[in-house]
Length: 209
Image 1 (spheres, rainbow, N blue to C red):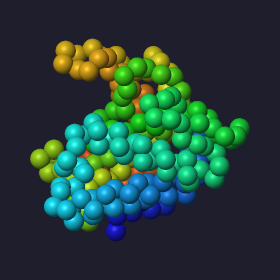
Image 2 (cartoon, rainbow, N blue to C red):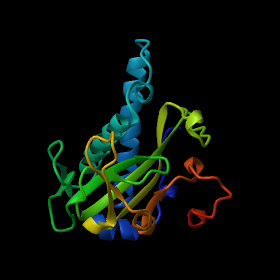
Image 3 (cartoon, rainbow, N blue to C red):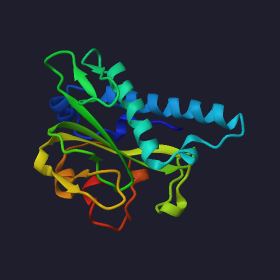
């Protein structure tokens, strides 16, 4: 079944301490995102149009997923958050003292969260893979499917100096990527090991087991 489960939650007390969100809120938001994407794909395929993951660029897909998750987090936050207007910082606005300005970031597979500018704040960072609709996942770009599955969520405070700035020719302006060491140190609050995009023999993510 295309679903996130409570057994995927890690460090629930840290999730709540940093964001005010409970584990159930995170799970409901991920599952609401899955349902929305499934509905879109069903409607498109009924008209012989490819699934959304095969139709848009990956950067646009990540942005779309992030917007859906942001709306879901606000809806399932028990009154802690409301969604900010599009293209405004932060993504989620606190409605009481138990919440914080919360920025949401998406990235594919092993990629680190990034933005156009380094912005200090509290972040909730999602990473996802593309498998098939039954959750069958094989590592490798050539094996990507057409269904989004979130494999990792981390939370934490990030400073401006925690970003690496690049201005690579051909990029659409500057890009600020969270440094690997900083991202690795962020507390893990959700992990679906069946979608881990690293080789099982790697010791990089042995702490996830």
